Image (tube, rainbow, N blue to C red; front, side, top):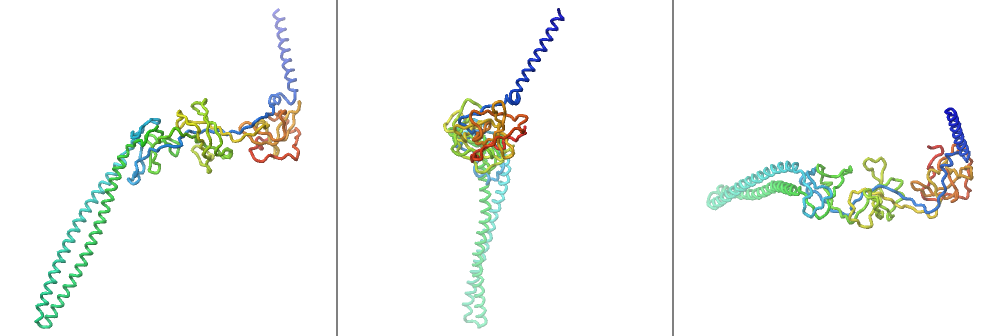
Length: 441
């Protein structure tokens, strides 16, 4: 009995295998193979849209900057470090402390300026004393010359009744005294001007050192940075994309420590490559979704497209900055949120279109593998606009046609059904010519 059941089981297994094999053979005989039958898709007809999708980041269009105190460059404070700063997202009122800067570099500079100021004060005092002594001596010499002139004049008057030689000598002595007094008077005026110039020189240096000291003291007082108005503190980004926080450097050329954004006016800033940027333009509508809440969809419009590309960090190709204004204010939005922006760049009404995988090219000919009953032909087509998944067919197919997604094994041997010479490509728009070479994986 056991042998009988075993024999029947082997017979049943053999019959099952034969039936499966027969089914496979029949299935393979249908058309150009099972793989080809499974990859047949119909030509679609309807409104065709071209959408450019890109990631962006929310940012306030208007904001108040929280910056370094003024005159930091005049205080020779070129690199300052943020010592402490309130957490990002903190809501502050005008006058609240937002950050403190490290005072040690400027404290060292203050010591240097203090020494220079003491030296300038000592030089100013010394110049005053020297000027006082010099002019005092010059006035005394001038007074003595005036007395000598008076004596010579008296001697000349007394020599009126003396011998001619004595009289002449008296006249010569009087003339010498007169000339000496005139010269001394001129020299005294020159010494006064010299003293005034010297005092202006040391006084200018003294004022400069005093101004430096005042500037440093004022700047150091501003190292406790306060909010200029009410708002939410948002960190700013450095050139490398990192946010400025405790320990970051701040310079007079990039003085912003943080910002207080206007949350009622938000925009999404994104970057497009050289191919996609040609498809977008100002005033195009944009659908914006938040990565934090994909169910929330916002309406936006492109407000600005950069004319010049730039090299972004960690990117090989140049990209163009695009600003998208959010049309309706939303109090739940926060700067720094990541967005997904879908820009509707083109709509083709009542178009015929197929998947991109179905379109092939050989030299200058673009074609598809079209099912014609149980056989397959290579049909030349003309393409129009395309998006990430599909391409418009402007000539060569009808709405009732079906095409293969992948090339059959004998695709190069199939005859090509060419388009009539009167059919010309539709100018403009992105085409799928060269989308996939024959034989490409």
